[in-house]
Length: 352
Ligand code: NAD
Ligand code: 13P
Image (cartoon, rainbow, N blue to C red; front, top):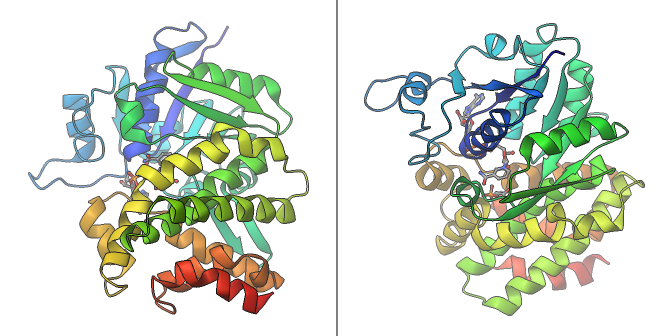
């Protein structure tokens, strides 16, 4: 019987860790071909060498995941179409703003039997309304697309510290189980739930709450304030998800993709970190500038997601129902000062 072949589309911080996790399983499980192709958005390093060549020579993503060996069966490939041509399991893991362009190039160039999974936290807003990334992938490429989200700070999983993740699937339980086999290790526990929208919205929306959490850190507000922000944020996550998709289940918010990811991202994520620096600058430095300075090529998802969520709220007249989401967006574009994050309940009372 033909073996399943995996390509990982993306090689940032999480993309590289995902390739490492997968590669540790494909060598052990006979249903998978050993080699894992990882598409690299090519760049030239300060020493003049190409990133993809360096990854293959050193078995390490020296820019996005330094110090970690990926496994000798990971092959970096700067050619997108070549990287997917033999694969029937496609793992999408790039910052969300690049997915549409990547899918355009993939149309007509993937195997007809390919299945996809998205590890991407984010959404697109089209004139017709919001579009989740997994839906974009499945519609553009005519493939089934599951999602995998969870409390998964990549650098911690890279050193094999225990964590959990949630796969969301639509109908194809068999595909979800195959993805779970591909990702599960003794230190990475994966479970699957039939709520793709709920899982994906959890992963996407918590990045907006993490910006709020970083702001309160930058304002030195303390733990009670941060917990309050997380509670209010979780409530808005749930309300927003259910308004968009009535199928979203309450139980999903108690999976790793829900409350656990919210907690870890608000404590230790990049969105939190950059938002803290933004608040410490009194809102004088922009998120773009701080992202470049602090993250060295890694990308924030929370600020653009806040804007995308805000567009949905405005189009549907829902702003007053989501004071935290609305305030995060207005602070990030400089319309309100960072301190507005804790004045927002006042704001909410005025709106309600
Ligand atoms: P990253 O932020 O570390 O890296 C940015 C990546 O974007 C690099 O690989 C870079 O080469 C690439 N890139 C830059 N310009 C590009 C372009 N024009 N076209 C295509 N690619 C381009 O990436 P990441 O951490 O792997 O994040 C990918 C997704 O995974 C995001 O949605 C993120 O929210 C999610 N995620 C990240 C973590 C984490 O801890 N890092 C954990 C869970 C989920
Ligand atoms: P940040 O992008 O804020 O680092 O969040 C990472 C994450 O999604 C953890 O699950």
